[in-house]
Image 1 (tube, rainbow, N blue to C red):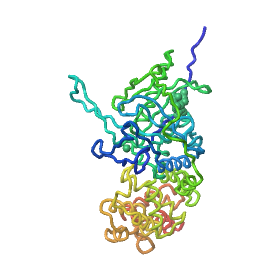
Image 2 (tube, rainbow, N blue to C red; image 1 turned 45 degrees about the horizontal axis):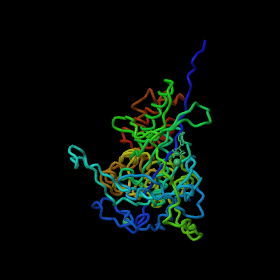
Image 3 (cartoon, rainbow, N blue to C red; image 1 turned 180 degrees about the vertical axis):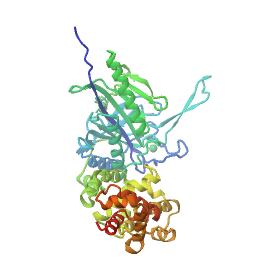
Length: 485
Ligand code: ADP
Ligand code: ZN
Ligand code: MG
C-alpha cells in the first residue's frame, strides 16, 4: 500500500524590469521626450521608421545605463553593440526593435541579495490607445497610435531567479526603485509607465535544484498588484501540480480587480526574434572617459546610506532602512538633524529618527512625504530637543506635534501659548505628588512596605492632575523621597 505524502513546494521568481531613462531626447533620434503632450507631436523620420532614416545612439542614455550598472555592481561591457529584435506590432513601425542581445551593456552584479543577470539598452515602442467606438468595419473598435513615446530609451534589468516570495519581490522592487530614483536616471513612476515589471514565476519541490516550468506575468502597474499577482499565480500553479497536472509555459495577464489570470500567449506562439547585429549602428567602445564620467556622477545609494545611518548615527537597522530606502524621508530626516539644536550626533539622531518614523508618519500617513506637510524639519528638531531637555514631556510634545501638523509654527511658542511646559522640580511637582499619595493612602502604605507594583497608580494620578505634563521618572523619584524610601 502506498501512502501519498504531501510534497512541499517553493516559489522561484525572476523579474524583468523596464525603466524609461530620463534623457532629453529619444534613443536614436533628436525628438524631445515628453509626457502628456498632444499625440504625434514629437516624431521624425527615424522614430517613424521612414525609409532611409538612420539611427544615432543617444550618448546620455548610455551614460545613464553605465550608472545603473555601477549601482547594481555589474561589469560594464567594453563596447556598446546593438542588435535587431524582429517582431511585428502596430506600434513598432520598423517591424523590429533595436535592443542588445549577446553583449548587454551591463552583466552580473546584484542588489539586496538578488543577483542581476544583465542590464541592456533598447528603445520603447509607441503607445497604442484602444479608443473603442466604431472602426471602419461596422461594429469593430478602433485603436490609435501615439508615436511620441516611440523610441524612448529603456534600460531592461533582468534578475536571476533568486526571489522566493511575492513579498521579497516587492521588497526588491522598492529598493531598486529608490536606487534608480536616487541615481536620477528615471522618473520610476509605475502609473505613467516609466517603471514596468514582468514577473517570471515557477514552483518546484523544496530542495530541488532544477527549475520548474515558468509562466510570465506581464505589465503590472503597481508593486501591490505584482505581489497580489504572484500570490494568485503561485496558488494556481500549486493547485495544478497537486491535481497531477503540469504547468504550461505561457504569458499571463493578471486583473487586480477580479484577481483573474488569463492567458495572453502560450509557448507555441512564443516569438522567435531572429536577433542579428544592427547593421545601421557600428559598435562603439565604452571609453575610460565615459566610465570616469559615470563614476563621478554616482550619488550615495540607499544601501550605503542605511549603513551610514547605522554606523555614524547608531540608528536601529529597521529605522535606518526605512529612512534610507525612502529617499524623500531620509532627506527630510537629515535636514531635521542638521537643524537640531543638539547638533549632528548619535544622541540627537536616535530620538529624532524615532519621532520622524513613528510619531510624525503615524499622524501624516505611513506613505506620506513630510515635505508636503506644515511641519518643517527644523520644527521637529526643536520639539525633540525640548523633550530631550525635559522642557516638555513626550505626551506634551505629542500635543505640540498635533498643532504643528495642523497649523505649523514654532514648538517653543506653542508650548508657551498652550501651557504645555513640563511640570517638574521640587516647587511645582512635589505638591502634586504629595496630594496623590494623600489621596491614595492604601497605595502609599504598600509602597512604604517595599511593594513597588502600584507605583503606576500614583504616576497616573499625577499625570491626570498635570494633563500629562509630568515626567514619570521624576514622579517616581519624588515618591521615594517623600516616603523616605
Ligand atoms: P526567456 O528565455 O523566456 O527570456 P530567460 O531565461 O531569459 O527566459 O529568463 C527571463 C527571466 O525569467 C529572468 O529574470 C530569469 O531569472 C527568470 N526565469 C528563468 N527561468 C525561470 C524559472 N524556471 N522560474 C522562475 N523564473 C525564471
Ligand atoms: Zn524622432
Ligand atoms: Mg531571455
